[in-house]
Image 1 (cartoon, helix red, strand yellow):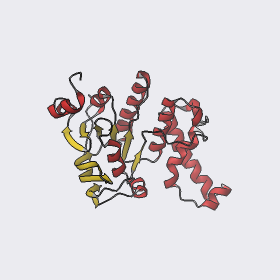
Image 2 (cartoon, one colour):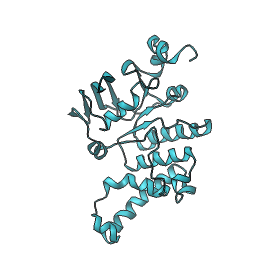
Image 3 (cartoon, helix red, strand yellow):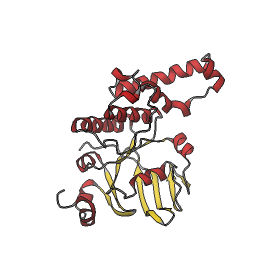
Length: 261
């Protein structure tokens, strides 16, 4: 596997516990994420993987534990703070504006960077016009990077599932994140689409230096792409280590990977 230039810890999860009523979703989870790595979270359905991402980017607020991001300790991360500080994500269920074009959907990823007020944007003049042209240039570069020039003006609701996933990835990239959270980006894809998405994940990490946290059920993909893997099993942390360490961990084999793997 290509050796990445991995830096210091950029985000640390300390003792996170999350409950909804009597249901314990996460139980004392702790791990860190290093600058420039691809960090995977795996486990069976219902393990708490998406809930963990929701804690990291502020959708869920845990009852116990702390998130430390870029040296700043906080009991909970608010969504707007996470976005402003450089955490972007894609979702397990595609969350795009189906009636808007590919280009316009990706443009929404730039919203938090726009400084002009609503009136300036409405009349599209002066500062607002210059600002939109600058942001549109970035979006066009992302469209080229993801090789979706042919669908740039197509409403995303007309696109096949795999292409919609790519557009959602583009929207997250438009925010220029420090950490990109990918929640099952290859779910429902055929082999060729998975290969394309895997290539984009590697290229994003390599060319942009983006730190990536990946949830994925395809163990071949996880083992090929990841620098480190944390394993959850119904809210409990089973293991944390390199792909080889996780693959050979007996508790992980018994609970999740099984003898077939």
